Image (cartoon, rainbow, N blue to C red; front, side):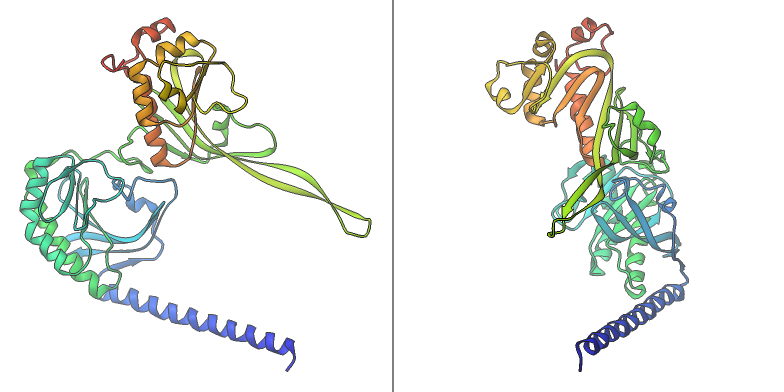
Length: 413
């Protein structure tokens, strides 16, 4: 048998194997869908992301890339509770989850059977001997645990992970079982939790306002998607061609307007190679580039100031401060050393050494940060920079020609 015959046989085996695998997966999926429908539930093959519009607590409200798949809709329990199960993908999350509708909104709360609460959530740890609880309202947490204790134990008895969150008027359960025979008792137990929560109207809160593409605890953030025209509003690399701005985000973080985006562009170079026989060939190579940009607009124009890593080509005059430790951690350069001394007072230096912001520069009314285009990183960095600006003494702003901004914290300056 020739080598060609062997290759042909192998290709044939791979093709047949691929067809068989495809048939097996299709049959399995058909049975899975049929199992859901036999429960009286509706299956949606290609749901729209809008089905998560009234959800903003983690894993929702995080990241720029979000996707939903394989939605199941129905009612469960007595009295019946509307639910959906959906496959959700975002950033580092990839799992099935169940969402059950509550009769009213309740304070944000997380309950799980692990040693740590759901990642990325705000709130305080609420002591409890059985569950790990994170809450924004300890009185409401006590009421929830009291009203839903038996239902939570029934949920744990199904053998599945307990990881619940109250998101407005929704109860969200992570790691929902995919098969109908396991999903049904899981949902029945969750319906029991909902029935317990329905007795807590005294802890009712207003329904949160949601954006179509919102971000967790960042109501001022606006997502624009791709907006090439907004490149003109930021300082960016201008060489090359094919410039585009993706995942553009704007907001007013404590009266400090900001814009963050990822800038892509292309350049071309001519590459000449030898053929080894005295000849050459020439081709054009396209190179792809990107940079992450984050700029904050200040209420007054500043002289140039850099705090962080100055690199080789930073402008301004090198400034040495009285803290040797601070000087080890941060380069400081400015066109106005006096301003640097005024702004980087001892309490400011302590704050920066503790919070460790990325390198930032101020020039005119623009504060620019060496950025990473990730929503969690952007949120944390904006908080840190806002803390820095809050510690700038009010008289410094007045010397710059504006009244003391409302975001300043005189007790910190």
